[in-house]
Length: 488
Image (tube, rainbow, N blue to C red; front, side):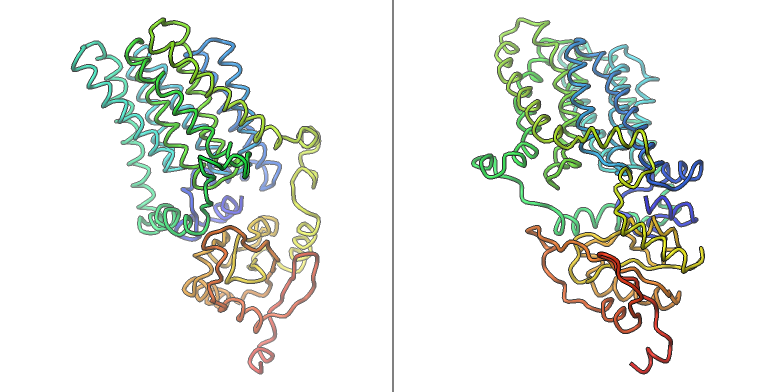
């Protein structure tokens, strides 16, 4: 949300402010803010629209490949995962909706077959680079592996020329569109900045400071069964579905087998989201996709009497039971129907916005004490040990942000180089007001729990600013007069 607001001010991600994700989601949100207003209510409306895109694309996919009861059950469970697991303005929601839409169109293009439909599906998959470049990579790798398998089959049986052309067209369109977007990003914001922020840091610094231990496969269920289900339900379901996928290649048409391979492999690649961070938001994308993959492989059990498919039935049933259990145990409790109905009736209420009254009051007071052009800095009570910062306060203030790091991440803002740059910018812009929030201390077993020992920013704030008022976990500071600073 804060990144979208910065876009409205003419700033560009990666060039003017630090961003871990490509600019697509923030850009679309900024368009909604420009058309209506920058608010939490508009943010939630956009999130709901992307949910409708996801559900619509899933319906296109599931009703094409599965029986109506199976499709409706998978669709309902997938909607629960989206509503419970993916929060508004998170780039994974937009990325997942576009990924599923691309796969749904590809299913139709392979079944017809139709090269034009495959080109459209590939173009949407390539456009994912602007939202989640890793999601686009998953689609590309999955399609390439399916193409290789289809090509090997074609060499032996010569019965798959049409789906071969459709899948080739899909990959070509995906590569061309993705390459064009990456080139545009490189020319606009600078390739080195994009590569460093959106690729290198998430793959190295964030993994060291954000990745959580995965519950062990053996013996982990008793230690924390909800965490165990979140981490292992999708991988175990995919393992159980593997015999069905192999049997599909033996007993089903090449078009059916090809798309089933794309769906299974895409889901397998998405599982690393869950293993990188153990929470609903990171599990939901692979959970949605495994439900669609199960529905895709289900017709083989009813339409074929081969021994391979019959032997896979118990495993498929176990996979379905596991996913249903995971949905019931992890996603369903996260839904608060009373909260949902309240937000539908009063979308702008404080309860619906999930913003505490103290934050709203601090933002109001600071806005009254500043003009629209006055930059305001929002920091933590200490900057050598960071879990998260109060980035939402920047959005509530809607004042110029003096530093690139409105998102403060451990391993980045805790370093001397970044703190020195923040101090330089605060001095250069003569920032008069700073809002300091007491945030939860890191408690995860990774590098975020280790203090960096760098106190440059904390020392600077203590020496150059004095408290004006305190409200809850917030302290509002004002720059001291020059003579007071120099005498100190």
